[in-house]
View 1 (tube, rainbow, N blue to C red):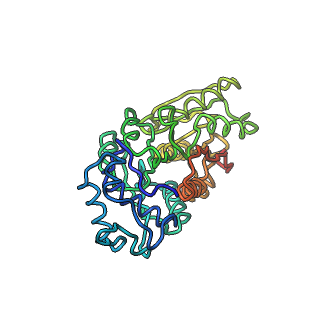
View 2 (view 1 turned 30 degrees about the horizontal axis):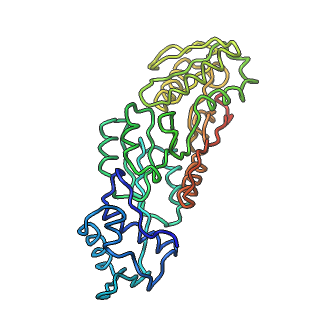
Length: 333
C-alpha cells in the first residue's frame, strides 16, 4: 500500500500541515477510503522523528473537520471522505495587462474549478517579489511564479517545495530544475523577423526600442542575431519621445507606450504607417488588430500558455514547455 503520510524537511511547510495535506491528498486520490486506519501517533513520531504534539495537532485538526475519528485503544480511522479537497494555487504575476489577462482567463477556464487560485503581482520589484513568496510558504499546494527578468530571486524560489513550483513566461538557467511554460525570447525575436524577411526590402534600418526595465533581455540577443546574420543596418534605443522618424525605418517595439509615441510622431510627420516607416509590436492584443489599420506583432499564444499550465498542474506534469510564438502580419509592416 502506498505510504499515507509523507513529511519533507526544509520546504517551508509546517510538519503538522504536511500531515494534514498528506491525508487529504490520499483521500482525494482515492488511495484511502472511509473506515481505513491511519498510522498510529507513535509510528509517525518514530518514522519522521517528530514530537507527539505535532502529530496530535494534525490529527486533532482532521477530527475537527470531520475527516477522522478516534476509537479508544484502537487508533484513528477515516470517518468521512465527503469533504471538499481543493488545491490552493499561489499565482505570482509581474503585472496585469490585456495579454496577461488572456493567460489568466485561459488558466482559470482549464482549471475548471478544481482549485482555489490567489493571484498576486510583484510589479518588477525584487523586494515585493521576495516578500510575497516568503509569506506564501506553507499556505498553498502549488506555486506558479512569473520571475520576469528580476535578479537575485532564484534562492527565494528554491526555498519553496521543489515539487510544487511551476515557472511561467520567463525562465533561465538558475531555474531549470523547475517545470515551466515559457517563451524563448531569443528564438522568438529571431524567427519572427525571419518570417517577415520577404517584406524587409523596403526598409533601410531596423530599430529596436528597448527600455530594459522589464523587457526580457533575450529580445536584444534575438534582434542582434538576426541583424548580424543578414547584415541589416540596426540600432537599439532605450526611449522614444517625439524623435524624428527617418523614412525607411522599421521599429520593433516591446512597449505599448513607445508604440503610441511612434505612431503619433508618424502622424505629425504625415507619414503612412507601413509605407514610409514600419512597426512590429510585441505581444498581440485585440486593439492591435484595428489600431493604425492593424499593427503587426511578434506574439506567443497566451491562451495556449494558460491551457498548458492548467493541464500540467492537473496532471502533476514536470515538463518544460516552450510556448509557440509567431509573426502576425498586418498593415503596419
